[in-house]
Amino acid sequence: MGPNYSHQTCLGVYQVGTLATFQNGLLLIFFATVLLFYTTSLFRKTNKRKIPGPGSHFLGCLTNILALSDKRKSLKVFESWCATYGPIFNVNLGPYKIAILNSPEYIQKLLGSTDMGYLGKGFAYKPLKPLWQDGLILSKGEKWKFRRRVLEKHMFSFKTLLTYMSTLNEEGDKYMLKIGERFASGKEEEVEDLLMNYTLEVVTSAAFGKSVAEMDSFANGELNITDTINRGKEIVATRAFNPCLLLDFIWRLHPLYKVERIVIQSLKLMGAAATMDNRVIPGKKYRAGIKDDLTAAGVPVDGIIEESLTLMSAGYETTASSIHFLLLLLALHPEHQEICRNEIDSVFEDVDLCPSGQLQFRALSKLKHMEMCVNESLRLLPTVFFFERKIDTPLVLEEDLVLETGTEVAFLVQGLHKNPKYYPDPEKFIPGRFSEEEIKSRSQFAHIPFAAGPRKCIGYKFAMMIMLSFSAKLLREYVLETTEKLDEIVFLPNVTMSPETPIKFRIKKRLNK
Ligand code: HEM
Ligand SMILES: *[C@@H]1O[C@H](CO)[C@@H](O)[C@H](O)[C@H]1NC(C)=O
Ligand SMILES: *[C@@H]1O[C@H](CO)[C@@H](O)[C@H](O)[C@H]1NC(C)=O
Ligand SMILES: *[C@@H]1O[C@H](CO)[C@@H](O)[C@H](O)[C@H]1NC(C)=O
Ligand SMILES: *[C@@H]1O[C@H](CO)[C@@H](O)[C@H](O)[C@H]1NC(C)=O
Image 1 (cartoon, helix red, strand yellow):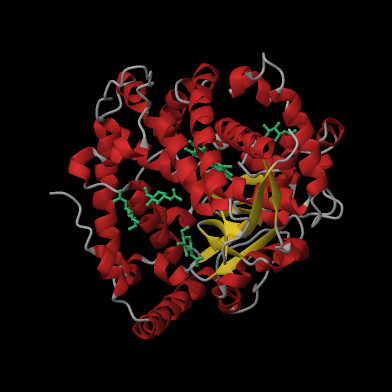
Image 2 (cartoon, rainbow, N blue to C red):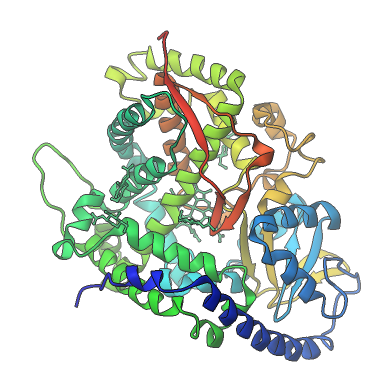
């Protein structure tokens, strides 16, 4: 049986009023549960050193949950906690208590370690589990280690990364035309949907050797990848940071729970599409993607499906949003746009680096200022603003400061990235912070947009290639402008960080080239 897309109307039936009453009921059940947990946790022994944190007083979890209930302010609340409480602090969320590591030194002790006890994920990933199953982001132990090695050796090896350049050129050029069409009138327009479609296309091609349309044509056109992933995201965004909905027995009562069942069916179909054989298109040489790599390594079909779902979900939106924010910052800083453009021009005018307008892999490493801009934009607006581990080995931070087995440890990326000790004048966009000298003088654990250590984003090099090649093509052809003000844009913790209202740009054809 194929997926049933009637959930489209299904979503439409919730009235805001009934949903609110429903959630109030949930809140009551939730607080009863909190009280129960709280009384038991009062007797748990703690460190010799007292760890500070918001809401550490009796029932402080209520103030924390209230502080986070306004999504428009959540990211700012995270930032202010990081600025207030120092290198480590606890956040009390009732049944969930999280230690936040907020200094590069402490972060290095955890992320920099190869101890398998530090590589497991925590409760915050729970809403992802039904959708992404036990793929690379969520798996742990030997299973994670083995799959990680196979994917690193094939999909993300240097040799394979080189082969992605042709897709990046082809799709990049296609989207430059689309951008030209959209902005031809000279009006302010948004660009996010184009970026999303672009990254979906390049990630799909890299992972499966197929286009999105080819995937969608599977199962007699019953699959709609874009739609499926976005619905999945909506579910995750609803559950994440809502401790009520993280409790399964409450979630099962939520109207979106039924939608989740349907999305899971579609996701399975998508995974199955990833495992189908490639059609041979004359003149096109596709890599068969992870299907062949994993099959050769003895991974069964179910495993290929879960890794497919994971790669798609992890790779496309993060990269699109990161390009989006980079374009915003470049539009706000024409002086850096100009430096990048000069650099880009010299690459495009070099026949070795860019024969007939086709960027070579080597060309990307020449885009030094561009790379600094990318990293500085990932510092200021890290799309993955939060990630978490649950430790199975005690973590010794200081002699009198040890995190016990079972502790949930999280990272508030944006807060860490705005520590003036490492980044003076932290709100300012200063790409020079990523010059060779400055990088050397700073811990690498002070910049963690892709996490760090053995469980660093497996796609970070690919993501850098996508961001660099796309923005190089864009700045070669166009000039970016915007009337937005950075401090007036509200960013929401929407799985990945996303602006509340679409960011508007003016993208004009370059006159002198
Ligand atoms: C700018 C874009 C990207 C950002 C900011 C980003 C960020 C991250 C972060 C912070 C993690 C660690 C999450 C955690 O520990 O829970 C991660 C993991 C991961 N990312 Fe990315 N990512 C990006 C692009 C990509 C791309 C393009 C792919 C694949 C095509 C990808 C695939 C993955 C996978 C599979 C993992 C799990 C790795 C593991 O646990 O071993 N990401 N990413
Ligand atoms: C992006 O892709 C979706 C789904 O394939 C499509 O409906 C939409 O028109 C595309 N948007 C743009 C701007 O190309
Ligand atoms: C996929 O779903 C989206 C949203 O419902 C819709 O706009 C788009 O046209 C659909 N694409 C296809 C190919 O059916
Ligand atoms: C930018 O960040 C990436 C990903 O962490 C890293 O590999 C690269 O060396 C950084 N480049 C600069 C110039 O800081
Ligand atoms: C979250 O992101 C989705 C997809 O990008 C978007 O449709 C939705 O409106 C966003 N939610 C909020 C609250 O902005």
